[in-house]
Length: 304
Ligand code: SF4
Image (tube, rainbow, N blue to C red):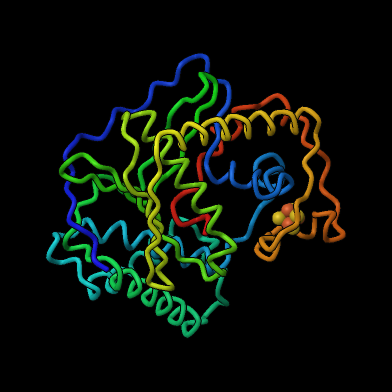
C-alpha cells in the first residue's frame, strides 16, 4: 500500500501558553502506564526506578531516528539505500548521546553490533514496503505537542510524524518497531494516538482524519478514524485517569495489575505479583503534581 502525497499547508502552531490554572501534566506514555498497571506508573513516574535500555528499545530509537533524518533528504533521494546508509551514523550519534547504549553489546562484539544494525535495516525495509517517502512531505516530525484540558491538566507528548493534506486534513503517524505480539500492545498504541488526536483537536480545532499505526516488522498499516464525540469522551477519560492518579498518590496506593505486558516489565523484582517488594514511597511524590512535566515525555521510539 502506498500513501497518498501530502503537503504542509499551514505553519506549525505557536507553542501553547500554559495558563496559571495548570497544576499537573501528563504524557500519553505515563497515562498508558497507569491504565495498564498503576504500580508500573508508580515505579516509572514516582520512584523513577532506572530501566536499562533493551536491544529492542534501542532498535526502535534507532529506526525512529533514521526515519526522521530520511525526510531531511530531498524527496527523490529518500530511497531504501539512503535509509540504509543512515543506520550506522545514526547509531553512532545515539551512542555518543547515550553512552549506556554501548553497554548493550559486549566490548569488541563487532558481530553483535553488525547484526543489530542489520536488524534495524530490516525494519526499514518493512517501512518501504508500506510507504513511499518520496511522495510525502511531513508537516512535523518528532514534534512535541501539548494542550490544556479541564483548565488544570497539561497533556503533552512527542508524535512521530504529522502529515497535513492539501485540504487541511491531519494524519497522525506512529511507527511501531517492537517485536512483541501486536495484540499485546495495540490498545496501548491506540490510546497514545488518541491522546495526540485530542491535543491536535484542542490546539488546532481539527479532528485528525486518520490515526495511523505503521508496523514495520509486519510491514502493515492500521488506520483508525476518530470523531469529535469520541475525542470528547476520551478527554473525560484522561481527566478521570489523572484524578485517579492523584488519589492513588495521596493514598500512596498503586496496585499491581498483572497482564501479558508483565513479560516486558523491567520491575518484576519490586513487584508483589512476582514476590518482590516496592521501595518506600518517596515523600516528595505527594507534593509535586507537576513531576511528569519535569521528567519530560517519552521520546519517539523509546517506549516501544
Ligand atoms: S510486573 Fe506486571 S503487575 Fe508488576 S509492576 Fe510490572 S506490569 Fe505491573
